[in-house]
Image (cartoon, rainbow, N blue to C red):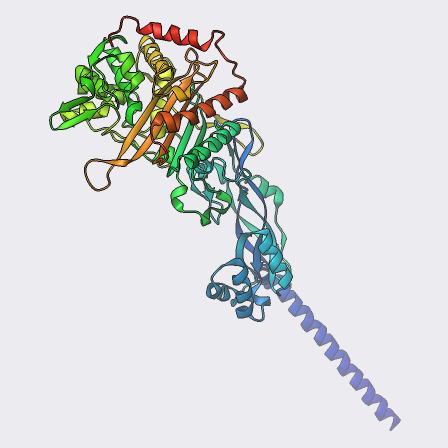
Length: 583
């Protein structure tokens, strides 16, 4: 019996050993199958669960002013992500998040109801939103480092710079125009996640190489600020609808400022009316009024007339067909100098009739009217200048003093700058250069002469006429700055009636355009005030703003006064240019 018992034990041991060996063999076979035959499929499955491909965009390049002050940059931000697989109640989570993030609850709930390991909830949320969500301590909701567009100077130059949308792509202004330069490169990149779906690793060095290029503007932050502050005060003082103020270097075409009012903050652009977004100095056209008279005079000088050439101004009333042209004051005989100084509509019409519509049209085209300047800003208008063979008799006269023709602010300032620049028209410059993310200059933009419009002699004669405008009895006396020889021209244009012929009797555009100093102009400035209600003459509304911007800009740029003689002597000297003229 003892032998039978021992034999049974041994048999059981053998059976157990066989089972153990079989189990080991099976485990080994399974392990071999997993590691050799199914390794690739299982690895792929694991990667799908704990890693994924996402498209990573490089940080957007910056926008600088001419002195490398930041106008648009990118700052650190938080984006909200989710691991839907870890969320027990998508409806409750979606409700809490949608309230804070102001996004559609149903769409979010659908996103959170999937069996995915990763999903975007919202990109680049505000710090306050991130704080509120962190306090909720929601399961399956995570916070990732990101970047967002930021405008450190808030309203400053907003219409020039524009802004970006939710995906950091440009929607307005230079952000839109130069989006392909600024946005950098995109790369499809694998990211690793932890068991909860949070991002574990993102190759920061690789992302740095994707950073966009930056652009350097011709804008001067200080002059832009001075212009905006002066314009704001002017629009409010005269209870106007809106206004623009532009500053340019006549010899290079560089734009130092383009100011608008009303303004908006691109950091929070959605709360503003979208009509405030556009750069109206480039996109909108208006009838410039008497500011056009200097171009009429320039054309006449080129055709052989002299500053002392005289024209009969009909004592204030002049009929052309069924139309009647009026002057603010009745004048008999006026020289061309006096026509510009006193801003006679009839005198300007007489000049235009004498030189002919074809000559006037051709010189206006040469000064840039009727064509885009091709400034680096989106949505530019070409204005409106109809062909001379379609002009009626009244058109020739009206266009000579700024009615029946429409211009953009940048066209008008560029034309005035051509006179300041001894007759040479320059292409307006808004971009100075493009630089890489490491500071290397990739492209430099240089001043570009478009053409010579008038001779140096004619340009000097027009300058002298414009100098008379800001002297005693001139329409622009309020633009005069002690110690500097200012050249300017006023404009007061009645606005055309909407959907009917004729002009409004109580809606005006007030204009003053000019430059200084006369001999070597450093700055050309244009001020346009739309529908002022407290006064409306260009010499009363726009000229004082011109004076303030010019004086403060000269002070900032350290441009010293040019005159050593008393103002009265200087006035006598300029007046002597008109000796012998008939009044």
